[in-house]
Amino acid sequence: MLLANMGAKCKHVQHYAIKAVLQKQVLVKANLYLLEPPITITADRSIRSAGTVHDFYSEGDYWWPNPNDINGAYIQKDGQTNPNNFVAHRKAMIRFSQILGTLASAYCVTKKEVYVQHAFKHLKAWFIDTATLMNPSLLYAQAIKGKATGRSIGVIDMIQMVEVAQAVNVMQKAKLVDVVALQKIKNWFAQYLKWVTTHPYGVEERDAKNNHATCWVMQVAVFAKLVGNDSLLNDCSSRFTNILLPNQMAIDGSFPLELKRTKPYGYSLFNLDAMTTICQVLSTPKNNLWSFKLTDGRSIKNAINFMFPFIANKASWSYPKDVMFWNDWPVAQPSLLFGYFQFNNNNWLKEWKRLNHFPTNDEVIRNLPVRNPLIWL
Image (tube, rainbow, N blue to C red):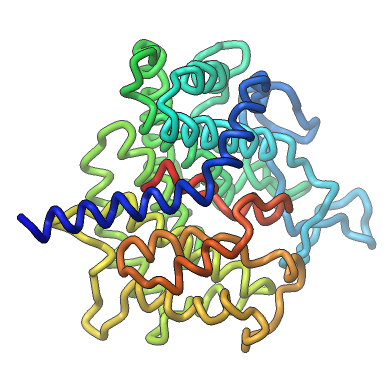
């Protein structure tokens, strides 16, 4: 009992220390967001979208016009983002995520219900209001002009909703929560889960070999936890231990498929953040993914240990530099914070504190689905 009490006290001190780092800026941002109206995907529509005004649409980042056939199908330039592709829906979803995550963080810090009430204005616009809602599917994501109206890899765009779902999860017991709206929001996520686990796009993404499979598990785990789908939670846990870790991680803790990309540093950070988020969401006293090890010793701790020296000193990176955004990484990676809470490595916490907690680069923000750690701890 004494050890248990000491552990609880230690966790309390740790949480307080994290709040001290983030609280001031979180409250400033949250109070500004109280003035922001909802903007959903219905505010913008691309003439190239094959869907309706309520269907999320995005275009493959690395696809460009063919200089030899300007009106023909696009060609790929891996790792090089085309700034002229349609990204308005993705930006709207990211904005939504930032607002919800920040408002929920402010609620966690202050317990003021005004943050919950404003958050639900945005939630109702996205998931309930028939004039502005988004359909619970991603049929038209990551489209390519002249090649595809949508693709399975577009499912990864939905990671921008993980902090929305987590925000709902931490706010749902607030005194002034709209319980009718809450159930409708959960129903929306339940419908999306049915789509992403049965539609060919979702199934193909689930069976990918790299960060796309990781992000499938991450989003499904977060959404399943919100709606109470134990079957999917168990499936996600099994996928982490039986598929993601053994198929993606090398014995040294690296992710070889990410290292082969044209942005190996950014992709390695991204996949590690997603994997540690999975551990944070799914771990239980009886099934602790943080302590899980494969028979050859591989574990999530190995992956953090592999990347940490390169986070602390990027100049030591011994692989090719990213073709874009090399100077914008790292930031306050959630893998360091989540890992610290499990393994008490103070060097990880020290580095997390030192790094930028509020990045402004669009590419970094897009690839940092956990931007508000206060709602995850």
